[in-house]
Structures are given as structure tokens and as C-alpha cells.
Length: 161
Image 1 (cartoon, helix red, strand yellow):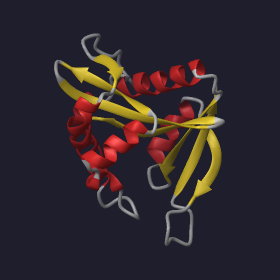
Image 2 (cartoon, rainbow, N blue to C red):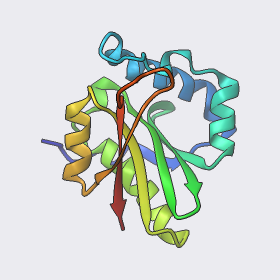
Image 3 (cartoon, helix red, strand yellow):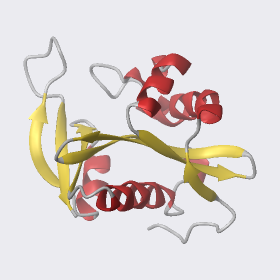
Image 4 (cartoon, helix red, strand yellow):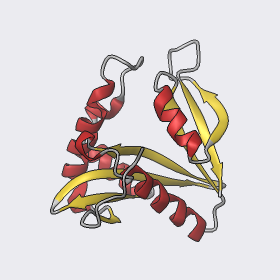
């Protein structure tokens, strides 16, 4: 499935200077879900201010290919677990284990922080994304429902490290 990642792609912590590029990266990476999600993803309405707040609430990692950001992920500490959020890799860079590098970075940081669990959310409609996380050891934690919806719209998955 995944090929080995190109060594030239640098993984590093996200900085405030990266925020405009992160906003664009998330918008582009999540564009493929337009029309598949109800409610629609908030990724298309991501702003610099909201992204700055997300980064300040925990942190993030980016993948840099020669000055171009091609992947990112946020993390947020929540007491007994770390929340992994907005994993994004540009379409042309998929299949190179880049998502795995970002997930591994969050998991490594979680362990070094003395936290033993990582949680994330996946929309129910994105069965292929859920299957990917389950192959990495994430398991059902609970269902979640967006405001105004009578039925669950997403699932929370958890991995015990």
C-alpha cells in the first residue's frame, strides 16, 4: 500500500510562520470530501485566526518538501489523552507513508508527555479513513453527534500506547 517516504521531506514542529500555508493545505486536502459529509467539513472555512488558536491549544507537525508544506497534523492534550486532529496530506503525496509519519510524531510526543492514549474523530461517511486508523491500532471509543443532528455523525477512536 504505502511506499517508503522520501527522505527529502522534512518532518518538524509547526510554527506560527507556517499558519497561512497550513490553512491552504487543509483546504486543499479536505476538498475531496465536499458533498460527502453532512454536515460539511469546517476545513473549507478554516481561517488564519482559528488555525493560530488550534496551534496554541497544543501544537502541530508539518511535512516540508523543499519549502512547500505537503502535510500537517494538530494535537491537543486533554488530561488522560492526546487528541489528534486535522491530519492532512496533499493528494499527490499520498501513498508514501507521510500520514504515518505525522501520526507517529503525535504518538511519540504523547508517550514522552507521559500520556498513554491518543484519540481522534472520523466521520462515519469516511469508512476508508476509519479502516486506515484501525489498521494502525485505533479502536472504537464512542460515537459523536454534530449539533442539530439526531443521529451520530462521527466516531471517536482511541489507541492505547
